[in-house]
Amino acid sequence: MSIKDEFEFINQIAPKNTYQTALIKGIGDDAALIGQDPMSELVICLDTMVEGIHFLESTMRPSHIGHKALAANISDIAAMGGIPTFYLVSIATPGHWSKENLLEIFEGMRELGDQYQMDLIGGDTVSTNDSLVLTVTVIGKVEKGKHLLRSNSRPGDIIFVSGIPGESAAGLSLLLEKGIDFPFNNDEVHLIKRHQLPQPRVELGSILANVNHRVALNDISDGVASEAHEIAAESNVTLVIEKDRVPYSSFIKNISRKQQLDWFFYGGEDFELLGTIDKSYWKDIQLKAKAKGIPVCKIGYVSEGPASVLLKEEDQLVAIEKKGYNHFKKNR
Ligand code: ADP
Ligand code: MG
Image 1 (cartoon, helix red, strand yellow):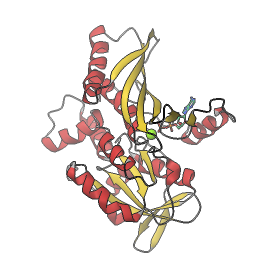
Image 2 (cartoon, protein in one colour; image 1 turned 180 degrees about the horizontal axis):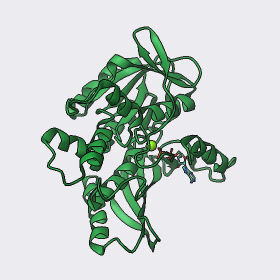
Image 3 (cartoon, protein in one colour; image 1 turned 120 degrees about the vertical axis):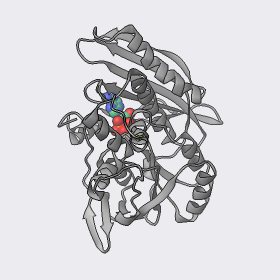
Image 4 (cartoon, protein in one colour; image 1 turned 90 degrees about the vertical axis):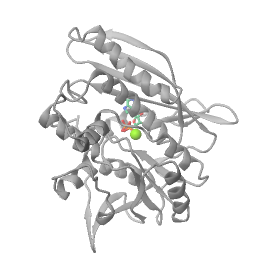
């Protein structure tokens, strides 16, 4: 299914009416929100990783697969401003996967889950014919009313990003070229780790949730272009990204700026946060992020106009396409 089809498809299946009055946000953001008690809201999301589509034996060890499947979900909770608390795992395994390797997948999840004191509370174990499929559900919480939606962006906001999106794609490119067992140098190991063991930005999500002013937030699973488009569409604004503000990685060597820009916009799987915030709150966020050692940088501004994403270079504005990158297949 192409990305465009995927969005059409989700729109078609999304219920027109809902029954439960506790539902705050259903389909259409990084995670669903359900009002729980006077103090908090439940945050719930689900993400699937498929062998051959999201990973190959030559790019990820079993523990990396587990880590990343859980990280992708924790990242969606962070993008709502929430804290993860519980997870459930469905695993569909083909015969050629050994028990040791399957256990290692769960070990990868456990190590990451421990960092956040998350409990594994259920799941399902089934067999499949060819590829391994791992589906993880994460439940989290956010203080009542503090959740952050993609629809919160307004003209005049600044656009920011955490970390250096594109490093994961750079790591993947090395893995695909040289294989997982290659004796990589330190810079390369940094990039490969960004691909295999991404660290979701839960702390930054919480800092942003506690601004107590609207912040539009999305996590970067499909690349900055796709995530920026989601904010633009949900908020009905134009996001202008300034080319000379795009952060470049000091770990990426001997690669053209053009390629790095391509990874930034279309690489994906960085699980960094992309958001927009009222200008007057930006300095405070920078200080709080710096105090926690979290890199954040301004990359542009929001303006009035049709839901779209533009790249600004000097006085020229060029439309950024809404597309994601698929690593191993032509279409997703
Ligand atoms: P993200 O990239 O943040 O994980 P997606 O783009 O995968 O989000 O999904 C967008 C929205 O559509 C989310 O709210 C997600 O829960 C919902 N969604 C995706 N696939 C389905 C499905 N098969 N059934 C119901 N909801 C879905
Ligand atoms: Mg997301």
